[in-house]
Image (cartoon, rainbow, N blue to C red; front, side, top):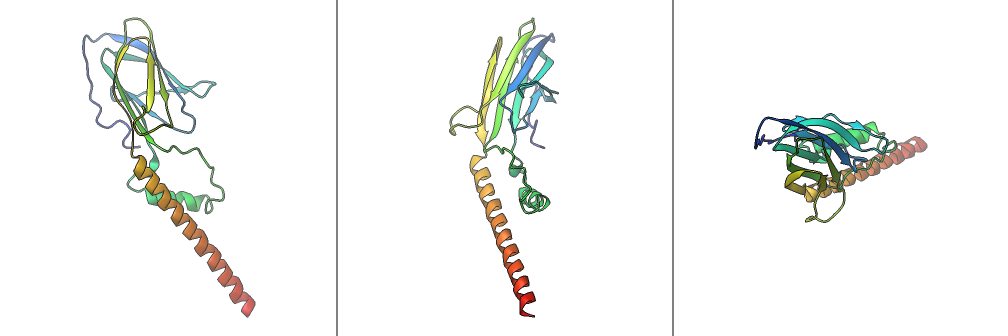
Length: 187
C-alpha cells in the first residue's frame, strides 16, 4: 500500500480554526480504502451496516483523499500472486474474495462550517471509464479535484497472465502425476 497517500499537499484557505466532521465511507464491502485528511490517515470504525465511520477535526480547505488500490498494481505482483497460489494449495483453498476490478482515486477539498458537519463518500465499484469513482455528499461546501478509476487495462492484463500461469501449473502438476503413476505401474 505504498501509493496510499502519495503526493498529498496541504491546502489551507482561511484561518486555523478546526471544525468537527463526521465522515462516513460507504460501499466498502470487499475493499479496503485508504482515507487521508491533509496527508494523515484517518482511523475508522465499522458500523453494523459495514460502513466506515470516523469523527475527525479538519481545517477549512483540508484535502480529503480516498484511494482503493489493487495489489496487482504492485511492481512485485506476479511474485505475490504465485505465493498466494501456492499457500492456498494451488488455489483449492482460495477464499474467493471479492476482488475489485478497478483502482479508485478520489480527492476533494473540504470547507466545513463552524458547526459539526456530515460528509459521506460512497465508493462506486462498477461503471464505465468516464463515470465517477466515488460520490461525495456533505452539508457544507466541497470541491472535488479528482474522481477517477486508474489502471483498469493493466489490472485486466495482469489478471489474465496470472490465470494462464495458474492453469499451466495445474496442467504440469496433472501431467507429472500421470507420468509418475505410469512409471510405477510399468515396474
